[in-house]
Amino acid sequence: MSQPQFKEMRRAYGFDDVAIVPGGHHTINPSLVELSFKLGALDFPLPFIAAAMDGVVDVRMAAEFSKLGGLAVLNLEGVQTRYEDPDPILRELAEASKGDVTALMQKVYSAPIRPNLIGERIKQIKAAGGVAAVSSTPMNTKKFASIAADAGVDVFVVQATVTSARHVSTSEKGLIFDELVQNMRDVPVIVGNTVTFAATKELMETGIAAVLIGVGPGAACTSREVLGIGVPQVTATIDAAAARDTYYRDTGRYVPIITDGGLSNGGAVCKAFAAGADAVMLGSILAATQEAPGRGHHWGMATPHGELPRGTRVKVGIDTTLKQTMFGPTSRTDGRENLVGALRTAMGTCGARTIRDFQKTEMVIAPAIKTEGKGYQIAQG
Image 1 (tube, rainbow, N blue to C red):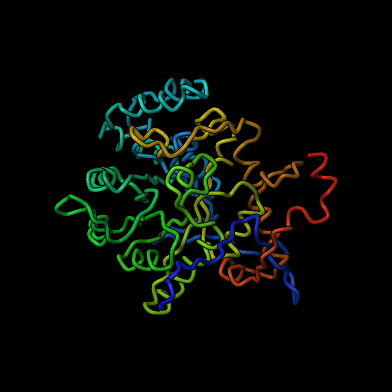
Image 2: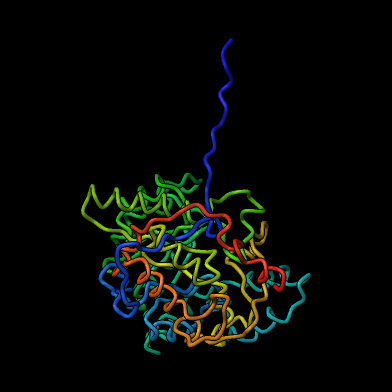
């Protein structure tokens, strides 16, 4: 009698399940570590990207984040391109009750996207001294990419809950990333999101400039609850990094991976890089800054979906500034400020001079890392 074939599962790990092992041979002064991030022909002093969410990035935020050394992405399918003056809309969304806000979002986001505002926002970001990066879903990419390119966009992001190199649809000819990359010429194209070795490597083979990693870990995302899909971020990042390194070994072309979501403090940021990330994308932690347009609120791009919302508005409050979040100084002990300082310190402690060095740092499975010896903190928390 034959034995039944059972589905096998492996254990996957998130940020709270692991720890970084400090270097034993040597350490480096944090001021000497190198944090730069290269995307196509563009060089950024910091490997930090602000997420394309309406509560996080508007024209002002994009320019300010650029001046600090990072890259901020504007959502081309949000209120910034549906309304000439999005500020009253953002205020209304922030002030709505918890029970009414999703329905209000569905109404607000039903207004048509105005193509003229796409080019206008890009030009406003560049006029303010920022690097202009924008994001579109795959469905609208062919329509919006040419408009963005004509307006002088610097980076174009194609982003969905899950993106693959091969998408089966009713369209006679769907979005083909090889063609998109060719049409955008010198504009780096970032694509996401994915969480597996195979999908990441196939996306890299299309010629794109970087891949976003993460499905469902964001503070405002409910894809894991609604759809049941996702992989904890440390495992997803490790698998994607293996795809990147395999592709680099085979082709000589290095395609960075960007861990996107679940990065609520400096510890998680450092673990993402140690797991293999080249850069990280931040959402809720930036939504709490004075410069963010959401007035202390944060919501995902799938929250206003007309038929199946996969997100919720979360209140993060306004208790810091963009500069403090990135560089300090800080007197907070929760790791939500001075992210750059945290990364520099962790790298120095592990003897890593560059991000690539830090990616080789040993990590251990350590579910007690946040509770061991912390009885007083837990009791008084």
